[in-house]
Amino acid sequence: MKECLEIFYAFLRVGLFTFGGGYAMIPIVERELITKRNWINMEEVMDYYTISQITPGLIGVNLSTFVGNKRKGIPGGILATLGFVLPGATAVLLVAMLIGNFAEIAIVGHAFTGIRIAVAALILDTVIKMVKTAIKDYKAIIIYIIVFLIAVLPASLFAGMGFLSGIIRSPVTLVIISGLAGLLVYRQKREGQ
Image (cartoon, rainbow, N blue to C red; front, side, top):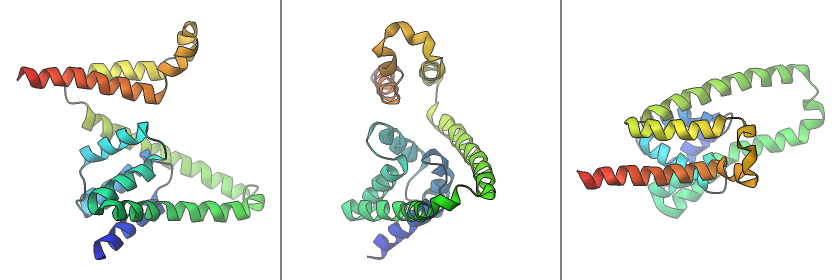
């Protein structure tokens, strides 16, 4: 029972201090779950993020569910998810009740401008950590460059492909293609050893 409460409390803290979505929460996940509690490592976090990209739902919710499930099975998954969702759901409810007056206050708009900057910095930090964790050799660099270019090149370059353009540039498709490329490239490497 004590461990279940600790799972709930840990994810309540993650949910309470996460601003800006799934990628912005990685520094908090690192502090709370990796450094402080040693429940997972950064490679597992990246694996959970990868799985979360191709499963329905929010990244943070999926990550919470995966880690909670790893720690204490289904009850742990449920408690971790509830802990993570509770602060955000409460904040959304409060903002929704006050939104008529809240959105028109100039100081609130200025505060949100500052928050967006902080979130961008957190996401950049996360991207740097993810790249360092994911790229291990030149084959990974090649896969990374190809996927990056497909994702960031202007849509007009894919215009001649019709509806396939949207499918090819979809994050789900890019993750699946990268997974298949990794399977082919690294499976051959292991078999060759």
